[in-house]
Amino acid sequence: MAETTPPAPPDLAAAYEQAKLEINRLRRRLDAEGMLRPWQVELLKLQQHLEAQNLRMIVLFEGRDASGKGGAIRRVARYMNERHCRVVALGRPTAEQRSQWYFQRYVAAFPTGGELVLFDRSWYNRAMVERVFDFCTADEYHNFLRGVTGFEKDLTRQGTILVKLYFSVTRAEQARRFERRRTDPLRQWKLSEIDLQAQDRWDDFTNFKYEMLRRTDTRPAPWVIIRSNDKQLARLNTMKVILGAVDYKDRSADLDFTPDPRIVVAGVDEVALMEAERRRLGRFTG
Ligand code: ADP
Ligand code: MLT
Image 1 (cartoon, rainbow, N blue to C red):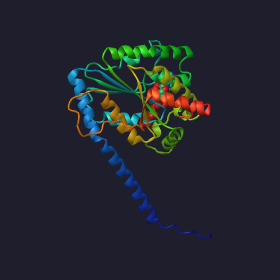
Image 2: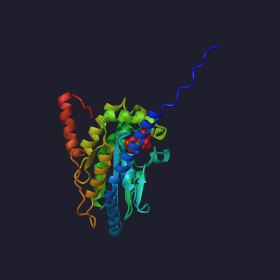
Image 3: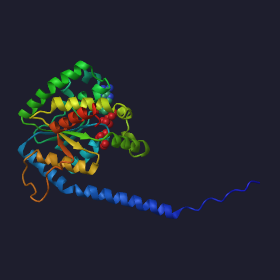
Image 4: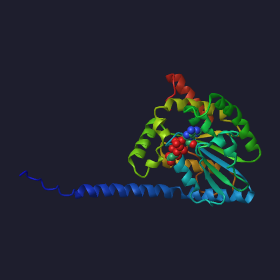
């Protein structure tokens, strides 16, 4: 009869180390969330100001997959009054929507007086993801780039406050986040067909990102780039940028509202950085 080896005793020391690591991870997370609170209080004041003055505001969040848009939006919206703050994430267009003016379904979700609308992706889908995956024709893409600046100019001239944020991650960081989506059961739902191709199509995305920033960074509607490899810093600085866009009442005198220049870059400067890189290497990498 074959001898059976007795089961190995549980490795308590290893389990203990594992638990300690997990507790530390949770503690760091709690600290990070808590750190945002003073700015979240300010965001509430901003919202109340919009309400009191009957102002309309749109903040749009663009960026590649896994760039952290969703997480930042959740932190911004966290304590807001849901009656006056909406998050809009439109899915792929239906046949009916496809037959409409391109901007129509977005406009349908625009704010009325006193409202703040946060767009998780936006009409800029046409400038990147739709173009990369041929969800639109080359003509539709060119028409979009030609029309969008005037569209935004009119929107802002008529009083809507518009903030355009582009979340920027590095290729390696995106790969790391996808890997976590693959392996973490709590994140698997986030992994889409499109995500699976984002790494392969990295350079295409970069080229269209460059065109988008170059063509649509305007004085009435400039782009703000948020370097989002560090999620916590990206979220905090997103809040600072939004708070800087409105002159609301009772702003805290002791809080730091200055965006960190390592994290927040103006659209024109990003374009210049990309051009310098292309001159140096003959191609884009970011
Ligand atoms: P998300 O990053 O928002 O979780 P996906 O990565 O699946 O979603 O898709 C990225 C974007 O591409 C979404 O805004 C989605 O609506 C859009 N999209 C996906 N398929 C199509 C399509 N066939 N036509 C137009 N847009 C599409
Ligand atoms: C993204 O950037 O893909 C989405 O915002 C999901 C996220 O990172 O939360």
